[in-house]
Amino acid sequence: MTPTRSFLAATAGATAALAFLAGCSPATASDSDSADRQPVTVVLDWTPNTNHGGLYLAEANGWFDDAGLDVEIIEPGETSGLQLLATGHADFAYSVAESLVPARAQGVDAVSVAAIVEHNTSSLIFEASSGITRPRDLEGKVYGTYGSDLENALISQLIACDGGDPEMATAPLASDDFRIGLSEHQFDYAWVFDAWDTIRLRDIDGMDVGTLPFLDYTQCIPDWYTPLLATTASTLTSDPTMVRAFLDVLSRGYRAAMEDPAAAADALLAAAPELDPTLVRASADYLATRYADDAAAWGRQTPATWNGFVGFLEAKDLLEDGFDTDAAWTNDYLPTH
Picture 1: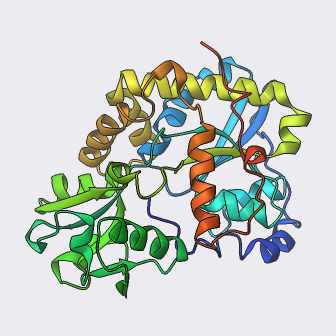
Picture 2: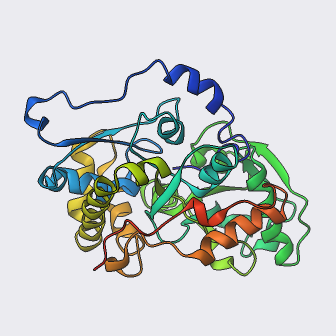
């Protein structure tokens, strides 16, 4: 649950991966009990975590089976979900707008069909003793970077918008353990996701930290969907019934996760028992009020959010002008309630 390491290189390995994946055969149902159900493969964007709570809850309750779907959940490994989509080796993939947009710009057939979380839950995190209280306080501080152009553009814009000098000092992240990086002063602040990293640092590790949530500064930087669920335009055309059936159940799973986050946590922990139960339960509680402002409208995306994000990328020369934003997403296959 960390920011994309390199925005413009998000699909840099796609071409090489295509050759590798072309030799693989699509996943199929092998269990005789599932022979009468349609196989559906879903690839995660990361290891199992609470962003996937509604998926695991729906699977644990047997709702996909009831809908005639034999769902297989896989982790991406070294091959991203968008690459698996592009080669027909997955039906759906959890991804992020900052990967989907450049992938589409390179010709990858990927379309966002649902927003997993309605608004961006990213923040910049720092030790409370750092003296940082607002974006312009980041001036002169060292940022722990993943090395992406998107990071530099967003944070520079955030600092400048608050009247600070946008020139950034950076240090590469040696690992995803922000606790070590902050406490050993390898850097002063880093980009994290509140639903996981902030809860872990503050509530599990007991660090005295502060955050600057991106969502508090949408007058300066865009909101965007991270994560989202993608499929391909070809799948939408060839099997719209399956897509609607899957999204109907998935929507039910996320609405249930909002209503009963403890059940969502239990389902995730049953599937990934290696996770910290305290962190998972606290994170599930946090996301229960953030998957969507209105549970009945879970998954809905807006033109304003997509256009704002793509417009920012174009303005910062991270994307060539003329990107077809409307073709990158759709709400048409979500259930209506």
